[in-house]
Length: 188
Length: 210
Image (cartoon, chains in turn cyan, purple):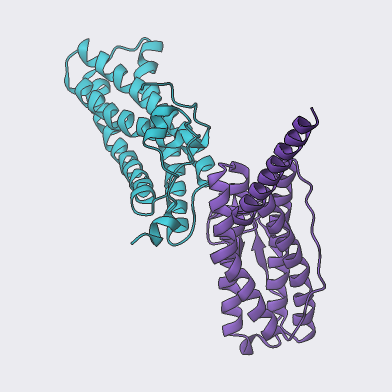
């Protein structure tokens, strides 16, 4: 009954990978916010956790955009798909660039005082991080818009990634051929 | 012994007949394979390339410089599609073959009408059918190449329709710049985007055709 599913190709990884940046990059500011409010040394630990989540989220964003570009080549086109797909790709590019910048800034904010052995002050632990979160909210706006366009592609236009064939008996039990958006349009 | 040989001979004949009939029945109802579809697409694109170049010459001779530019840009796009299809055919172990027919050239108005008909057929019938088969076969490279072509043909149909609508005003027009994506053949009159809407190639890489 349980089996190891086929290893996805790079383009087929997109539906799996896209959830990582969404979760990680939405969770990171929660930790940064708590880190800015809590007293040391707990606050510092929360801020480092926020930084790690941001870095992981940004890395997964790069993987998501790369797999997305590969998946887009195989997407069923037509109707309004091209416009939404193009908007999704453009926004993903901006989101990636913005979060790369945010990662560099937070990395500097967290690591530089330690490297330079500067004593942390209320200004550096709280106010700077609060200001950073205001900037972060712009990134969240990019992120949710990119995700929304991706959601429209899947749930409104029926665009699917091309998953590798699963020939196991468990897959056969509920198997059906992939439905393209064109085929969905034909259905009553 | 001889009866045995005769019996054995009958068994083989009946088996051969069954296999032959089975093969015929299967081939009668079977959809063309992705390789056959790619060959057909390659042939179609190669002919479209030659046809549009002939149409461009005719448009130039009739004083429709802008329409001639459009035909040349579309011809370049079809050449790119043919190249993409050929690469897939080779990857699948085949040899790309095209039978180039002498283009039937009419007036520019008739040529535009013929071009719209051809592009509409490719956009609505030919490429969707080929894509459906390629998806069943999970042939990624074929899907990619067919997708690129289908998207570009849809743009060609729009550009040709716009040219046909304003054909009278285009009499005496000069050659105009069109831009063709070197990767997917997407054709446009304006580079009002950062990346190709079809394959995301940066607009700086687009080829200018006039």
